[in-house]
Amino acid sequence: MDISNINIAHERMYPLPFANSSLFTTLLLALASQKIAPKISTTFKNEYDYIVVGGGSEGSVVANRLSELPCVSVLLLEAGQTPPLVTDIPGVSRFFYNSDIDWRYKTTPQKHTGNALDNKQIFWPAGKVLGGISIYNDLIYSRGAMKVYDEWAKQGCKGWGSKDVFPYFMKLEDNKDPEFLNNGFYDFQGTIRNSQRCSPPKAYLVPAEDRTNLDIVTSAYVKKITFEGDRATGVVLDYGGSEHTVKAKREVIVSAGSAKTPQLLMLSGIGPKDHLQELNIPIVADLPVGNNLQSFAISPLNYQINNPNMQTVEQRLADDNNIKMYVRERKGILASSEIISVVSFLKDLNDTNEYDFPNYEMYFLEFPLIVPRNQTNFKPGVFEEVFGAYKDTPIFLCGAMPTQPKSKGTVRLQSTDPHAQPLIDPNYLADPTDVQAIVNGLKTCQQILLTEPLRKIGAKAFDKPNPGCADLVNEGDKYYECIARGAVLPISHAVGTAKMGDPSDPTTVVDPLLKVKGLKGLRIVDGSTMPIIPSANSNIPEIMLAEKASDLIKQTVQCPAA
Image 1: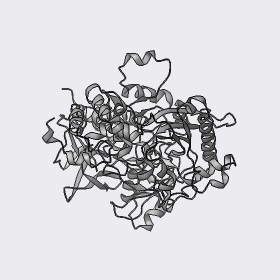
Image 2: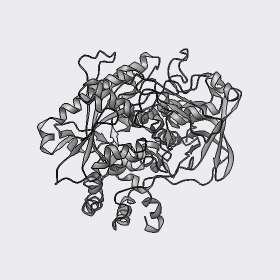
Image 3: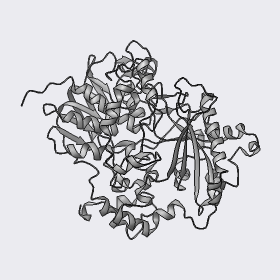
């Protein structure tokens, strides 16, 4: 790519430690050696066989797989832009939260956590960009526990048990490094190829960009699904300053995520009857859209490293030698999955959860201060109180979260304005078992801190207790619970708001074919259909779901013989 084709000013606008480096342009040119986004259509037709709403992980997969059929036409609509080049650097994912490629959502004020947060609201990451949150997630590849998918099947998701979904995990995998087979230690894998982020747009849309039966349109905001009787007939969208209506001959497929999907459905008349009537929205289908919201929430203990030989994350990322190493050799801190050192899944031996697998997960993260400053919504003064003394000190956190959170929340409409933020209430820590899982994890963190390897590098707890918890420092579980009640960090893996299951189950929205109950020509293909959250970062299970959904849809099409 020629440098004249790169919007350097836009790439510099993100708060990257190396944005002002003299090597920044060189770095961009190195990134441009891989194509990170497909060709974008600036025009579109009035009618397609399939309209896919949302160009995140799932929408990218579905658009690719359906357009493999030469006899169908596919339109992929994404509200955001194409990804900036700098998002392709594995080492800087956390610098894009609350930016122009994020929806900048906040939850409603939380009842059971958020004591240290402004209005008790938590930032809610959601990608407003082609690729969705996969463009700036932490790149972790994890399938989750297979027993969760067996539980899906038990709850009425016929054809979604572990044996059914496993082939689709295999289909999406592409690890060609033979050295990985020789590892004696299982490190977590990541969505990285040639030391750059391997996102679904890169993996699925770039190879399909020249298909004449596929149009990919960005900056296209879908406001409503249109119906004739009980059949979805198309969508209404804003594009280029005008409103447009596009018809779907076969199906509208919604892949907008666990907040946007229920918002679009409810704006279109599909949702809880009482809620729609409150807003005078004509009812198309009375279904429990927006219920069953499940999301991971991590609660951290913060540590400092008193070691004059160690740099902060920001210092290492801005080091010209590290930038040169990445450009020339594709190695070093910029080439790695940023700040995550260790991920572990543990089980409290006293816990008897029905799934019989680890009930809490722990992360060791060395993090830049931009994470607590820009992504945590602290009350005024709290950031300085907690982190002010450590601006030039390497710091890390040990965070804990439940692998199967029992607390469930809702998504509702704030108004009939399609551009208004939905009301997102994850209801974090409402269930005491979630709190106990975090407490157990934080106690394990503290035990690990006392080990010889961490003492050797000068690791120790912050000098001051967390705000509001000083009187509980010596109170064991009460202190760790106080930390959890102070703040949690969502990690962008929300599911469940258009629940899949047996059509006779009144809590479900879609059947096991992902068709919206009682309607024709409308499917949901994203994490919102997951009845139970996988015990893993959800990006890979979502891609699996989209691969399987694509096969289900393709089975309904028979192209004429060539």
